[in-house]
Length: 360
Image: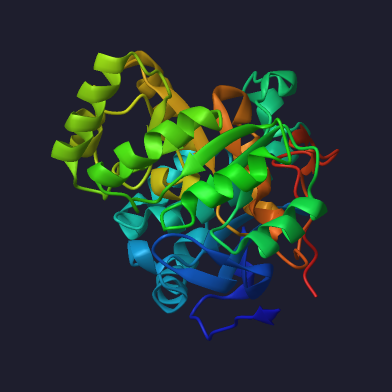
């Protein structure tokens, strides 16, 4: 763990809410492969806001696919420091609005600050966040466990580490797709959710489709490349013609409101990630908007610490599908929060987002 400190022109007596920044390089238990890349560790920044003897935490995970680098975000945080440390938090949305001029266009960092503020606010109110927002923990869907693209030997090894989950999320997108499906179906009767990360063409989709049906796939996420709208039209038309009703969820294809309009009629649902929405406060609003438009709603976290997963879990009862297993993929998380019992979310006894994170 590396603590980040820089000189700043603010007197200690002026500080109302202390901003602390800690960098972590989180090693993964296994090298994780998806259709576009592989990685063995994740670089993160923990934002901790301290006020009135309490603290709240949020997490930024580097994602170069979205041009969100650690170095750029560290510079951005320092530009926010003076405003943040003179701010007295009363409720998260006002704090978000106050930061908007500094963080506009940087949803990943907005998410880190927003989740930290929500965590702190919940602790100030002495309640878990999901209870404050009237969300019943018992209504949260069961989380899936994710397998990256890998050899059958490696997948078998990982399956033995996490047997008896009711849902497995399979990263597909190369020539081993059918072998992976067949191999795991011979081991479990669990539901299969497939995430392709845009790794198929239209032809590949239709080649895989009979196997997706044969091996009981219940959900398909991002089958085609981000902007292949014509390809999605062909897929939707053919599925309707054959009366095949496997839900298809958009992830990378959704970034803007314009994209959302394009997704209507082509995708059954949207993967709502806090980092893309800019935090918990806006994610709640966005989920309600999607429901109004008739979309199913999914959510997922990347490989990250329990901080990010615990924040997402606070609004889990709003989702149809969820993948919260990212912190399980990490070889040692710097914080505690939710736990997963074969996919069932076990909420922490801590208030706010349920996070406990001690500075060292």
